[in-house]
Image (cartoon, rainbow, N blue to C red; front, side, top):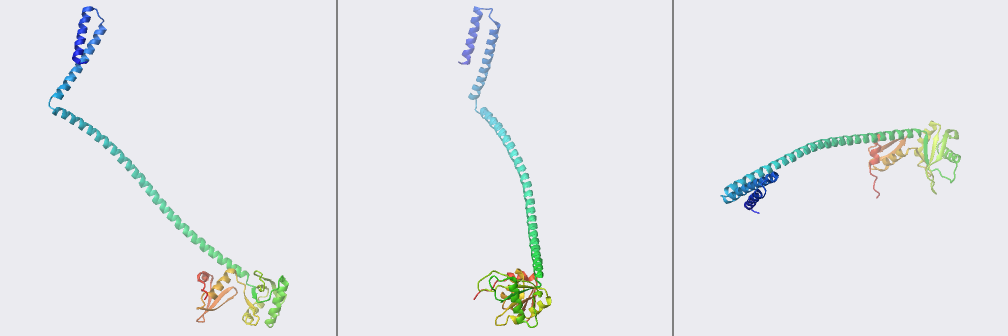
Length: 294
């Protein structure tokens, strides 16, 4: 309903009420007055809007411009706040990343230090192990200082220790004049190695008399040149025997002969120079390649 018509209707109704009942309720009159005032204000606002739309559009443009500017400022303000918040978060993240980088760098240094320490300990353990191995080998070889290893004495299956001793005594007395070896000169004698058919197992002879042992060793060269050779050598440890084999076979263009005495390995070179192989040189000979077969 148009506002003018609404006002006319309300005025007409008021007049009719006054004619019919001059003593009408005052509360109804107050309500009508309020409705008329609101309608009047709405009519005024409507008139202003109509005037604005009918006037030059510059006022409307200014209004729109002001609204746009206000919206722009509000949006920019909001955007600035968001950017500041993001920058603050980025700054905090950078600080956190910086702390993490320092921790990672610290951990990296710790790992490197630990790795170096582990390598040092491994070298130390290896060196200590080699030292212990050398000492154990020397101790084992020392415990064999009274032993002689004999090869070439025939073996009989199920041969007893006494039978082995008798064979050793007979063979050595027969080939070494004035030796006069007896059971009293022998601490113990026994065969070593795995039994193989048609293979004479070596004998280890532990002597009581060092003098007679030295006498036997002096005749070793003579005994191995017989028609039925008897080979007499030091009773070397497994490590010393391996090194001895390396010295004899790995550099035949340099080493002309090799031997052992009291568990110590020696060799003669092409210049007739005699060399002693020390425990410190063992790994050098062991690491040399074996000659290729031709």
